[in-house]
Image 1 (cartoon, rainbow, N blue to C red):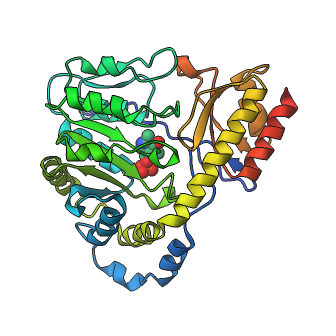
Image 2 (image 1 turned 90 degrees about the vertical axis):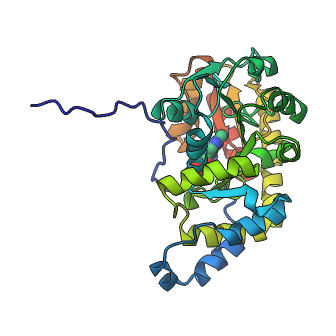
Amino acid sequence: MTEIRGLRKIEPYVAGSQPKEDNIIKLNTNENAYGPSPKVSQALEAFDAHSLRKYSTLDQAALRHVLAENLQVPADQIIIGNGSDDILSMAFLAFFNSEEPVLFPDLTYGFYKVWADLYRINYHEMPLNENFEIETADYFADNGGIVLTNPNAPTGIYKPLDEIEAIVKANQDVVVIIDEAYINFGGQTALPLLQKYDNVFITRTFSKDAALAGLRVGYGIGSPKLMAVINAVKNSINPYNVNSIAECLATAAVEDWAYYEETCQKIMTTRDWFSSALQELDFSVLPSATNFILVEPNGVSAEELFNHLQAQKIYVRYFPKVDRIKNKLRISIGTQEEMERVLSAIKEIL
Ligand SMILES: *Cc1c(COP(=O)(O)O)cnc(C)c1O
């Protein structure tokens, strides 16, 4: 066979599995067990399928308008995407074009490395310290941009805003992306930094707090200078990147944000209860400000516990190939009832 020239070799991102069985407790991809607001279901029922004959909006003005009000930022400083993965991918293309390496932690959202490789962006992974925290001083090194998830994943650890600001302040000649996928589970947002710094770009998603992972909506917020560039990238790839149904339902979700404040609060309460219960079993649990915990079991290996839980149709995330966390499991926080069942299943194997 003739070899085909020009084919790209890539190491893709490996997403958490989506098992299809019934009656499972799915705690492997940080989805939200409470589901979306009832207003989202109503908006879906009322949606006119005939309107789909037309292209979706180019600027998602309605969704940006309700978000602007909810977040107290100007609507023209918001860009909507097909999930925050879409926004982040465009941000890498838009903002990281120097020779110097883009910096991000060695343990963080696994997709950053994949985009950097895909777009041939030079990068350095900065090791988290022995407590799995981001070391502020590491980000004072020369760089071509910075990406931080705050709170970080898969650790769950929140970095205080004054430390984030110190990094932004010391790097005003490059873009600092703050991925706030989990910010509504107990952290303080970096949005106020937008008033002082032109180089911050914040990304958010409807997948975790708003329980709309399958809808694929995320957004970015940044200065007019950054918006001009990322909008140009969007219009160079897929101008209609957000479908009409997604825009309509995400708008309904923002309009009922009180519902989400309540469900996020429930998840945080369950998370703190579940973490304490595991600590009583001498498991080591990293302090989480997210809807998941990273935990090292005691008296049983991560692998054994993973297999034991899976046999009971409880799916959690296990990272056997990531050396620093190969003895840990990442467990998404479901409903209180689900987590009580998970705790019983854990006690069973001990
Ligand atoms: C889930 C997640 C995303 C992706 O969100 P989508 O909007 O579903 O694409 C991005 N960053 C982090 C840190 C996440 O955990």
